[in-house]
Length: 129
Ligand SMILES: [Zn+2]
Ligand SMILES: [Zn+2]
Image (tube, rainbow, N blue to C red; front, side):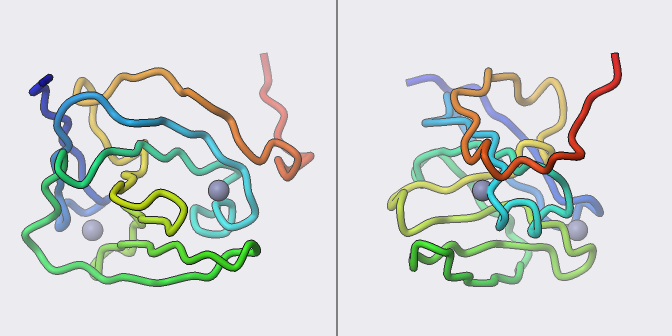
């Protein structure tokens, strides 16, 4: 088993976490829920099995959301800075995602497997050359 540790945290550093080994899946998602959760055009989810992760020792808050498919998604966020750094979904039982942007180099560097919900990518997303 690969034992590489990937460390990350929320913006203020109050909630830090460790994921070990290779992620199960890496998504970029532009569903409406990810847009509103992040305040951006995309969510980046790096999914691990629960047995690969060490959650913050500090207490963090949770918010359970029912998506448009009627399934729950539970977000974990920092009580001090509000960063949503993790989430779990009814659809992916036994797994947990960390927000890709919460990992600090060189602790994470896996390619994105999938770009999902492209249809709801906002029309304003245009990258200058
Ligand atoms: Zn924080
Ligand atoms: Zn999404």
